[in-house]
Image (tube, rainbow, N blue to C red):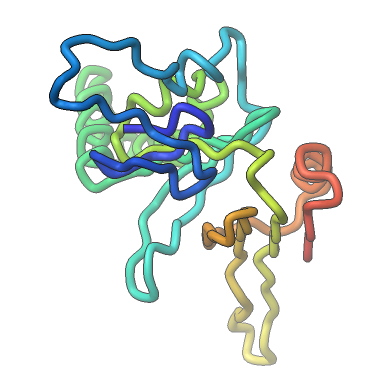
Length: 210
């Protein structure tokens, strides 16, 4: 279930949203019918909405646990599409079937599989938020109005005297007004276009570090 105000995923039976504090309607055992509060899809998933930026990242669930996901930035919200092991397995199976249908050999098939995953994020540019949320029950949306600040650190790399590379992976952190934080790691180096897009979306909320 999702909050009807901000769209955050909630545990079944929740009475209040942990993100925005909105009361979640819970019918009593004496009620036989009622009109539920508008869903996220009804309130925010307007026709024609589209992504302005999609990045691949890993969400930090705990110190040891991370999960792959795509962050789909729209004009007023970000939609988080998790790539679970089951989802990845299903998508890989579809790609393998496509390779077989086209009669590609081992080397061309391997190249096609690499291309498939390297461009996988592109599909989100043509999907609405309701469609993305429907992909997986763990997917959720975050309205920009609930974000207090955004920190985006680019991946940095350097080369030692022996030619080996070293550096630090990139990171992305959303700090919410309710004190909550969403943390991600990524492998994106500095890009002027990406920086300009994030600056347009978040203005003075954004701290961008190369």
